[in-house]
Length: 273
Ligand SMILES: C[S@@+](CC[C@H](N)C(=O)[O-])C[C@H]1O[C@@H](n2cnc3c(N)ncnc32)[C@H](O)[C@@H]1O
Image (cartoon, rainbow, N blue to C red; front, side, top):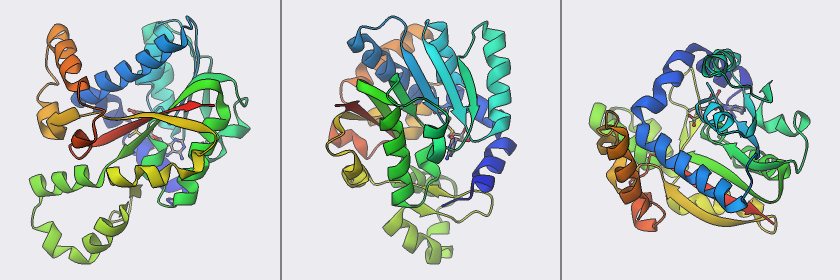
């Protein structure tokens, strides 16, 4: 596993960039919001209890609080949480709580079976051991009420390899010693300042064996849909109406297995039994 200090230091150092990330990855943001809103609507709850584990600068948390939901924001990075508090103040919303903690221990900081929606859109990117990813998934489920939704995000191996092909194609040969293992395991420990795990879409089922009996997998969604990362980024500057239409069209196939390989981010929706 990446030590807490390594990942925390990385996100502390990159908190400003993290704050802008979803402006550039706007399709990911809009698709994810659409998934969250669909879940809330299906619960028919006006004021949902929500916990955003690894919520960074609070883009989703603040938006959901603006909609009238009670939101607890958690992150490993104190710098991200400081930015989130400022953002919440600027937006004129109050977050129920802001919790500086590791997702591996989040059940020590929030009441079990008390949330209608549990978001975990970040921590699984940085846990290189399956048993730790399973612990975080189990923690997320433990916080959910029966019938509640849990959303888990993964970064894909294909997304990273597309990025290498685009920016530094020679690296696959010059660093084959590293990449030969990466394409087998998805463990990205090439950098000294961070450590990540990327998944193959076909392996998500194995990742989620631990939920068996505790939840059903409602769906898996490619946050970049059939467009893929680069083309999706071209939509960053779209007007609201245009974006809405693109999200409508992309969502028509974003939960079909044939679009999963185009994903940089995959969101899995679980419904707790
Ligand atoms: C790529 S950002 C995603 C932020 C936000 N959820 C989003 O989707 O835009 C990943 C976030 O997860 C946080 N994180 C990583 N590992 C974590 C862990 N073990 N516990 C809590 N937060 C963690 C990081 O500090 C960072 O803020």
